[in-house]
Amino acid sequence: MVPRMQIFVTKFREVVENVESATCCGQFRMSLGRIDALAEYNTAVATFVRDFQPGDFETLWRMDQECFAPGVSYSKPELMSFINRSGAFTLVATDAKEIQGFIVTQGGKAGHVITIDVSPQARRSGVGSLLLRGAEDRLVSSGSRIINLETAVDNVSALAFYRSHGYRVVRTWPRYYANGVDALVLKKILSNA
Ligand SMILES: CC(C)(COP(=O)(O)OP(=O)(O)OC[C@H]1O[C@@H](n2cnc3c(N)ncnc32)[C@H](O)[C@@H]1OP(=O)(O)O)[C@@H](O)C(=O)NCCC(=O)NCCS
Image 1 (cartoon, protein in one colour):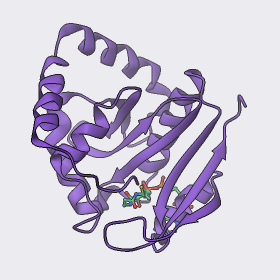
Image 2 (tube, rainbow, N blue to C red; image 1 turned 45 degrees about the vertical axis):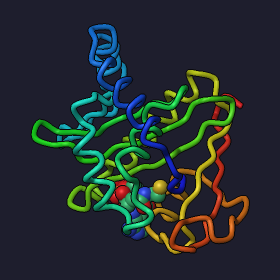
Image 3 (spheres, rainbow, N blue to C red; image 1 turned 180 degrees about the vertical axis):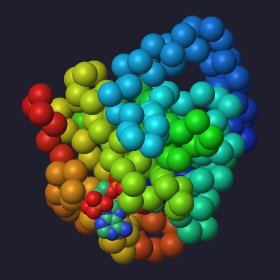
């Protein structure tokens, strides 16, 4: 997870305007197309992965507060700025009733998982894996050759999760998080590399 950063009010306004203007038809059509493309990730419990829609934002932000300690979880402007970064995409895992998790990812030759959050009630049922595989496939098809990410040294479940998906620790960033905890940098070489 990328750490908190200071964002000025003007930047926040700019981002909010971008999110609002993203509700136009073009964005919506793109989302519907990608639902089909991601249908293969559906599970027996009818969880499916789709693109982020602006109306999801409040739910995702609340989930992030549940998933991370205060000071590590994102403020609304922070989360919004990551979602709206150039080259970033956000996937949402949902069933018929509610959103179960999301992943924010940055594309590029070296892709980057900015954050992955699964609601506590939905954990250990494959939702995180569904999201990570969906993001990896999207990154591969857009030309990424590796994926990097950071996670706190004491985040035992995340480390087990990433290891189970083939990520390996490559270095440590001392006191990376706002609460002073070190981060481990993990890396995975994608199949097209
Ligand atoms: C890390 C996280 C995304 C995993 O999501 P999830 O939906 O529970 O993961 P999955 O069910 O797909 O788990 C896949 C595998 O990862 C490993 N794993 C996941 N959670 C684990 C845990 N708590 N303990 C040990 N292994 C774990 C297991 O090998 C698991 O396979 P199994 O259930 O068949 O044993 C979720 O725990 C989470 O949102 N945590 C809070 C936010 C966070 O720390 N994000 C990562 C840092 S950016």
